[in-house]
Structures are given as structure tokens and as C-alpha cells.
Image 1: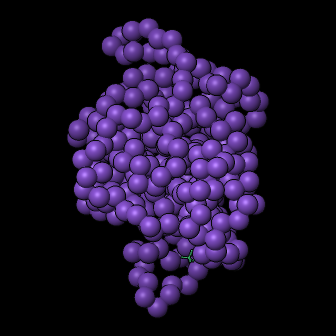
Image 2: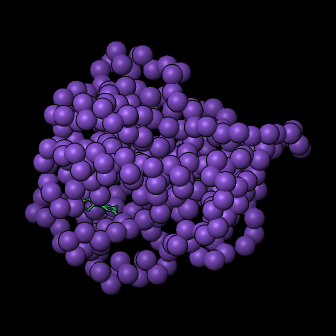
Length: 295
Ligand code: 5GP
């Protein structure tokens, strides 16, 4: 996983006040009819054909996105979260290096009483200052493997010989506490978070046009699985753009909102607006989230 770090600015009170309606809405063409109290709609996926479900999905995956991956249409309904219901899971998706991790970090930093990340699990040993249940849930590889077998992870990966992953229980814990859980995901985690329970709201973080990408990251550093905190290179920009193209071509129909991460501070403001809308305003969601099918 790559992370974009640029500490040259942080959101001010003024920016928070300036939250407005300038967000870029994800494109969608839809037609709809009112039916039995629901506004039903078929959202037209903009990727016209996609025959294979995601490799991580079982053949009869109950998550709505698997069927949506195989079909250009997905039945959606208008859904508004009841104030007493758990918050929707906020997921940030984007190419490594675009700033997803930094945006998530800043969102939590802005108001830790409202926003929280889920505590991940890892099979690596704790460092001296780390406490189980705070930075990570430290577990053995055997238990980790067992949790994988039992589909308890929304996503997981290996880094320097240790396993890392975020479990659905960790997310549930945050949601049950009344907070808004914010998570960054890789594209392969999309099916796992698009569920009746989590009702993930997917924010796609898009790189700005090439020249702006270079300009805005000039003083920033990139952290990857191989390099820690080194300046961005031209290859990094190409990789970000290539990865963005792939994500957009395969997953754009699942984006609830798109933020072009040009100036980080503007992106934070846009993200706060989007998150508020996701929780408090009606949104299109898969019909199966409202009337889960028995599978
Ligand atoms: P560290 O061992 O230094 O705390 O983290 C090492 C790497 O694990 C970092 O690149 C971090 O992004 C990644 N990591 C931390 N938590 C998770 C997680 O929940 N899932 C995945 N896939 N990677 C994680």
C-alpha cells in the first residue's frame, strides 16, 4: 500500500465553515418509477460489459456487487438512514499514492469524537509502545488464517512476511459505538463492504490532471511497501494514473462520490460534505440492501 504524505497544510475552522455543495457527484444514468413507497430505479453501470465476477467472490456471493459486476444493471432504491440507525461505513478508494490514506487520517484527526478507523488485526509481533486493541489486534498467524477461512476479513494482505487485515467485527465495533467508521480499501474489497449491514458509501479519490498531479505533489513524499518517505518520481505519477484508469474502468459504477484530490485541503472539505450527505440525505443503494435476498 502506498501512502501520500504532505503536511504542508491542515484544514482550518474557516474551511470547515466553508463546507458547501460543490462536490463532484458520481455520474449515473438512471430511470426510475415510484413503487410501493420506494423509488425504484435501475442504475445503468457505465462499464457496458464485465463477464467475470471478482476473483475473491464465491460463485454465489450474496453481496450485491458481484451480480452487478456481471450485469450492466443493478436495481437500486432511494434510502435514507434513520437517525437511530448505525452510520454507513465510509470507504475511500483510489490508486496507491493518490492520498487516500492521508485523507482518511485527516478526516479522523478533524473530529475523533465522530470519525474513527477500525482497529486492524496483524500477525506481526507488537512493538514496545503498542497495545493490543489500540494500534492492532495482535494475533498468531494460525488464528489469522482461521479468520480468513471463516470470511471474517473485509480485506487483508501480507507485508514483510506478516498478515494484516480489517475484520467486519472491528468495523462493527466502531459503528455500534455510534461513530462513523472510515476505512480505505483496495478495489478487491468492494464486494465485501457493499452489504446490507455496512451499506458502504464509496468515495473514489481520483488523481488530478497530470500537470496538477506533479505540481501538487512536488514537496510531498511517498511511502510504499518498498520505500519509506521518499520524494515522488515520474514513474510514481505514471503508476498512479495507470492504476486510476484501471479502477475507473472496472469499478466506476460503485462510486457514490468522486473527489479529485488536487489540493488536499479542498479535498478534506469535499469529503466532509460527502460524508454528511451519505449519513443524512437520501442516497441510491442496491435494492437488496433494503430487502435482503435469502441466499
Ligand atoms: P506496520 O507493521 O508498520 O504497522 O504496518 C505495515 C504495513 O501494513 C503498512 O503498509 C500498513 O499500511 C499495512 N496495514 C496496516 N493495517 C492494515 C490492514 O488492515 N490491512 C492491510 N491490507 N494492510 C494494513
